[in-house]
Image (cartoon, rainbow, N blue to C red; front, side, top):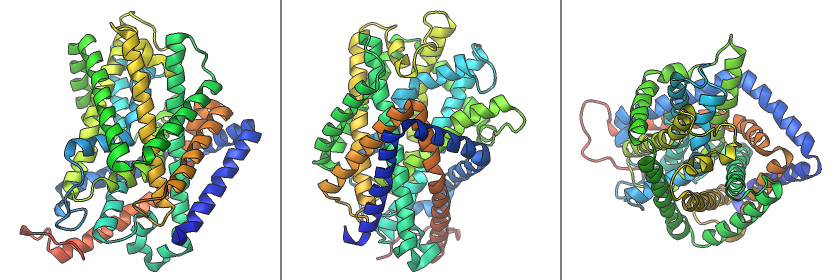
Length: 508
């Protein structure tokens, strides 16, 4: 850890100050983060929309570009994980707990509470609600993860750089990435990662509390969320002892099995044909309105602009704050795959599965509310999924299974998050020490608790948007660095000159 000890020390120091401030002055922390979020959303909303759309287009370009043939590693490198396990790992790290938390709540909110198009409680509003949900959780989101993962995997496994955010900028800044400039880059990435993972833990703890509140009439209380986070922290520390090859891999596979059981249960016992129709129709609307939604900023409609700030800008900031963690983790499990296979697997497969999840849970909730079967939108966000399950047979059993699924998603997110933070603060080590991972595990849990204590879900969202802005500039530089390096390598390999290369050899 010696070479990068300063990154660890400075990051822990800065985050410790935030924890202490949140404990001693929670009201001030909530007020400041709220003001900062408002400023960022108002002043940089246009920037987030353009940046994320450009990132998505660059990733899509790699699917058709000759550079898609280049392997993320040496020519004889083979993928460490088979495709189903690879997909389970990236899906669990990238979206798992978010889908469970927002799968019912977001489409229902867009339909019944605040429509993106002003069509609340109508059939058109139902289509619009799901279309914007697809937009928030689809190609744009996975492109953010995919870009960071692609950059790290390419420079680490093909160019023999350290698995650090700063090292990926060498084509732009040369040896300066090894000095103070590089350390500042890595510190910003670490802080953004901690905020992203902490926010997700906070959402998960809130939903476990919400499930217990709905099922057993427990209060929605910070102290219950505290107990949940303590238990989760202990469990993911136990998992962290076994490493990616055992702990995270096994838990990720179980995640997928339990999530599939829950999904099929609601799909089969719910309005099956209506779900399929809504899924198909919404994919068409998503593709048709892809660019219109991508650049929608509503400069002359204050109500629409507030909706965009509260949802679209929030999500783009969330994905950006998670990008260092998820990107480095996906890079770690994707060695040996070609750029084209990587982009296809990371962008499209998770998006389509996520779309079906939202169509199933969100579609069922909206149709139940529209037909008068149940009024779910009046419940707390954390309780909405359990309210949907209560309409089905074996409701209690499936609700308990959902609580187990949330807990495992929390464990895998925290486990993989502390692993990545360990890599980022030990000079890119692929095997960070248990002491370092333990430190980050405690820090992530502490930040989550402070944010829940100071302002609940609002504080979680505000802090995430604030921490994402600095790293967004780094992502822009990473994208330029990757394009520059790939352009040079493509010329060296003769790619794109109308002839197929028999074999692409990586740099030794």
